[in-house]
Image (tube, rainbow, N blue to C red; front, top):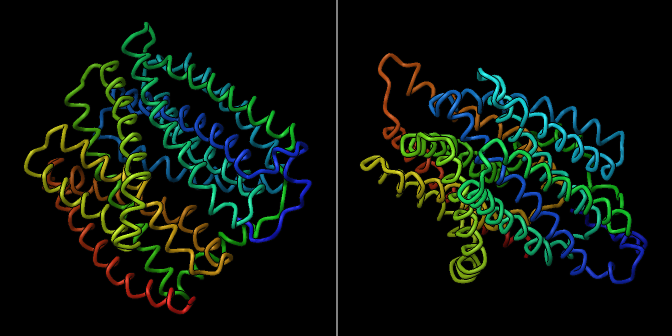
Length: 426
């Protein structure tokens, strides 16, 4: 986010658009539609991949996705550096919609190439659409305004997750549409996003403003900033251990779903409904529980809830490998990550210099997350397929519990640093 003042002309051609709340309402709708589209595609991509190759092959596609993402983001940032971000967003929407239509006609071809490519495509566009949205949003808010309105805008994404998953489940259950047809409904949604974004730009809602620090500089200096700052290094460790655990839980969850729902349409409908329920829970936690935890117990307790709940449900899954405990572990991972954990981690950054934060977050988001997700995938392959004596899906919980224990220990160390930094700021 910017810490500089905006040019008044950047607030829109119409006086009403100069009100942060009005702009936030437009952005809420835009983010809602983005996540709605993604949660039509996520259940479809998972279900189609499982049908083609089985859930046990998921770690391989996660590794392919992470490696592809690094190459793609490098190219994408060069594109943004040469062209207007607004035009890049519009062009991206058109390209994605066209590719979704193409994938719809190719998806029934025999062989694993198309389902694998589609899975990778969905994961990449998930990152691109969200990053594009926030990059444009950051051009029209000051830091002070962002602290007031970003929570509201972000809630649009949580509600979009509920709507996207629920819509997909309804379409599969109550219409003649099948899993591949969700690609077309998502393409229509992204077409609406294109139109809304064009209108928002045309009425002057967006304005190109220089960022605090260029993306390239942030990416190059991020790891050095972490190495020189113990507090940021501990934050990075907490965030990256969460990424290390996530593939393990996702692998258990999707294998359990595959066993419970061998038929494609039933599996897609279940995944869609599950993502909708998870979004609903995340919204409830975000609005009802997170403020109370932060008010009465503080930021550190907010950070502890996710690894504690993951440990609890991983332990339960170890002894009863049922769909219920697989879903509970998944919600404790992603549902809490999208709600109380996200709010808590953002509070950790507030005492720090904005430029240092930008540099550190750029490295963590662009490289650290992918490195640790690949590491989690390699752990799964090592213990379930590559070692002479492999372990079952349920026994992966021992690894998850061990990582969560280290995660909790680092949070306790971080607690002392957090209080020290806050006292220094005061």
